[in-house]
Length: 282
Image (cartoon, rainbow, N blue to C red; front, top):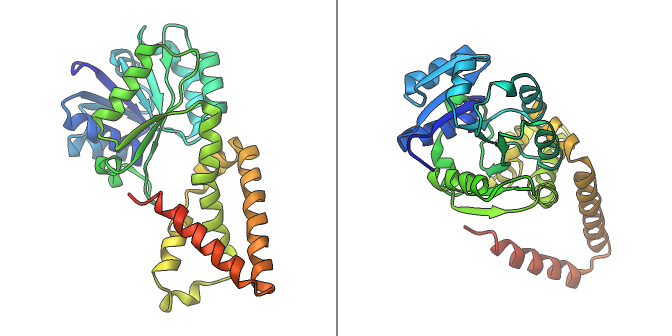
């Protein structure tokens, strides 16, 4: 990736702001668009962007050769519909959205042939939103997933890989959009469903004075952006429903083991979970 590249960040939230911060620290020219004037003002004050505009600015779009979309899935699709004529020929674009199969198919299906969309997913985030929480150090322990298709060029794939390397992601992997959505249905979406469901099982707020770290750790991600995650769940419904069913079956099995006081099977499950969890230690 050339240092004279002009980046445009569309959507200065937590991730968009973190991209801007990280790219600016590496010496790149960074512009931004956001619907919130306070987000633009904040990024300018922090020195994370060279210029920005509220809503849409054709000049900023045309000067960019590299574009990162930090938008919700549906907003990304609508932006492409409305404004893709403003891209300069040869522009490469990527995203941060947490579902891929439907997004990639729709964007690549409608995008101009002289603009390339190489989808990617930074597996990083926090339980807060907004550019004021941006911090590019969240990328350092994180995985970065590239989800190319036959519509992508080797040069485009190399560009998004270089972007991840520039931002210091710990590990970079490549999956098809379908493989990505199956993976994320289990690793991310199901875990959010479990945390949300646990917090909604009963009114447990009176237990705050007695809880230990295990409850806080397990329910950390229950503090959730309802608009974003509703879109993500619905766009990956088939995968997530299957994962919920498989989890429910495993939960029913554990209930049976407990009810029947099957100590040997319970210990086997504990040993298996302990061994599998070790693979995820960083």
